[in-house]
Amino acid sequence: MKRIVLCLTAILCVLTISAQGVYDFSVKNEEGKSVSLSDYKGKVLLIVNTATRCGFTPQYKELEALYEQYAKEGLEILDFPCNQFGSQAPGTIAEIHQFCTANFDIHFPQFDKIDVNGEQAAPLYIYLKSQKGFEGFDLNDKTGKLLDGMMRKKNPDYAKSPDIKWNFTKFLISRDGQVVARFEPTAKMSSIEEKLVEELKKE
Image (cartoon, rainbow, N blue to C red; front, side, top):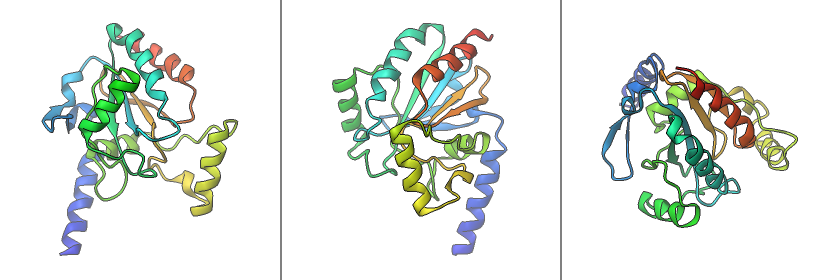
C-alpha cells in the first residue's frame, strides 16, 4: 500500500512539474471554494507563503503598500498562509484573515492554509519550486545570517534543495503565467518592487 502511495505521489509530481504555467492550477480560497489561477491571466502575480507570528510578519504592511500602488497596473498578490515554519501561522484561515485586516488592512486575496513542502505540499508549490530554486538568504541581513546558521546546523547542504526555507518567500509570475523570479524572505522589498515593475511594463 505504501509503495502504491509513493508511486501515485511520484506521478503527481511529474504531472505537476510538466504543467505549462501557474494557470494550470486551482487553489482553495478563504471560504474553501476552488479558484482557478487562470482567473488571473494577464496579471503580474506575487505569490507569497505567509505567517502571522513571524519576525517577517510586518512585511504584510509593505506588501499592502505595493498592492495599493500597482494593483491598477495589473499586480495581484496571492497570500497562502502556511504553518510549517515554527508553527507561526496558527488558527483558522478566518482568524488569520481577521488578524491581517485588523493589523495591516490588507486588501489582496488570501487563500486557505497550505503546506509548501513535504508529502502534503500543494501542487502549485511543487511547480513553483521546480521552476525557481533557493536563491540564498541575504547574509548582510542579521536575520538572514541567523536563518542560514540555523539551517546549516541541521543540514550543511540545505541550500541545494529547492524547498521553501521560511515564511514570506515570494514568487513573481509574468502576465503569461511563467515563474520569472523567486525572492527569499530577507530580500529587500525595493528589489522586489524593481523586478515587478519591469514585468508590469511588459505587454
